[in-house]
Length: 586
Image (cartoon, rainbow, N blue to C red):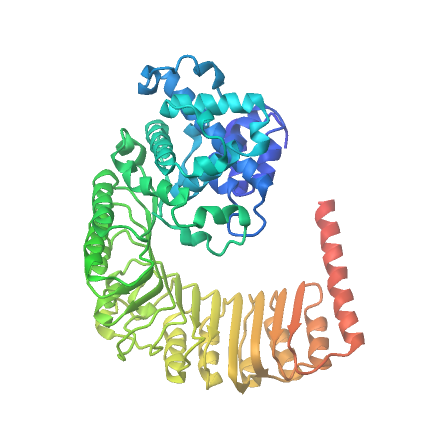
């Protein structure tokens, strides 16, 4: 790669490193063309990069300085843009004397912002306030002059009246006014946002953090709580309708927010945005009677979107039809549906999922169903479904509802995941895996953590899906013999095999499977196995020589011989070394 590559090519290459801040920062030093294109990705979601360590104890004073400097650059860019555009801020008193101190930035950084999490921005503002009143900052005369200029331009007030950071922290109305001015300028200057995260008052996201620096923002009455109150008002600022008109993603967490305020925000957003493709909605609590108006407003937002492809609902009790009615009105566009910890007292509130016949991905994580009726969904309801996942759902009864079936065949299904960690029910496992053998033949990924009482159902599923590439099986309760399964199954494309639990098989059966299938099996993981011995490992090394690259054994009952373990390690390392050499030569 040379520095003379066209900008469009560089943008395409840099897109693969959009989340790699270290590489992007390194590109800044190559030349101006590389710098310009790297800046676009660094400032696409700048506050995420600045606060990348916010949920860990690794966030230190060094990172606070970086966050503070970035936020200061962001604020001076807002001020400079407003001044040169002749905005209202230029007409304020005492501004002209301070303008020269706010030097123009190298780039219009604000214009590059496309993804904005207002929680992250609020935390960055709070960190900036801590940074500009730190002892080290106060010892630098030029920094103090810049701070005074920013205060004079933004709020027409001198920062020198605050003799200490403690004194400044007590002025909550001031930080609220600063935040309001920043948000107004931001909405007026961002040409368009692709992704907006609205998580009002969501300090709970940082409670897992043990960083002493950030704990100050989590205290009751701290700045951060006052800052996030401004999140709900951004939709009413000038040009917010232009900034948000082409929103593609919207993420929301409702927490300690008035129902009427939340409801009105969602309704107002539905009138501005009609092209949202992905919505993530986190109730973060059981629905109270007063929250039904929020679900009604969410229904309105869903129905107003003409391009909605993905909807994710979290931490909610479904006791109304609002959400499913909204989703059913988007049946022609909706492709991905994800529920996380969604409970329901009646299956009727979620059975409408079966009507979303254009779904390509259906995932249900956790949650409890109050009804003891059979879970009404099966992949046979969705003829174009590619991913079907049920993870730790209770109760676990799975049955096909013939009235909701669009087809008795699911040729598009590629990924099947069925995990029940808390409550095992063998008849449910038999029903759903048995359906795989009848309705699906193009699976690539098969994963099951449940009580399997018969190998016959696995045999039917694997024989019906000869193109399987990845298999993960966990069975902690029963000791099952799979010799017949290995003898009968042919999986010529298998690349990854993980067996957790007591799966018993002989070395001869394993040899028979590997010789007849000849799979490109590069990764094998065995855990808690009670039958694997030296003959099994010898079969693997002989049949998969030049193919096997990863081999892990954990919590095994029987210990392998030292010679066999050394032989396995040497063969795998030699193969990887030869492959690396061949690649370098090419």
